[in-house]
Amino acid sequence: MAYGQTGSGKTHTLMAPDGITAGVIERCFKRITQDDLHDYKVTMSYLQIYQEKIYDLLNSTNKVELSLREHPVKGI
Image (cartoon, rainbow, N blue to C red):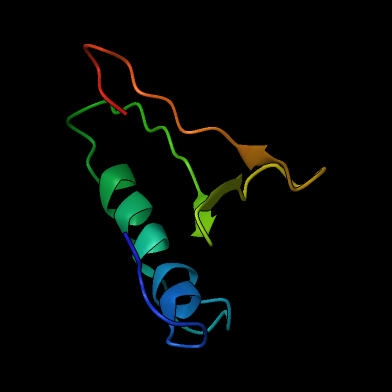
């Protein structure tokens, strides 16, 4: 969802860590929760791909490199 050089504003755009504005992720969830007519199931992955290595950023206990696998039917 966000790609670019270090310091180019990816984290700010997605998460708005300054606490003043809402980032893209927060705005999406607010929009979904305002809809009283439908029920939604939301799943989320927050990954970092850096130097050909993949990391799960929601796993705060340790920074473990993940494997990229491909399912013959479902894809990557």
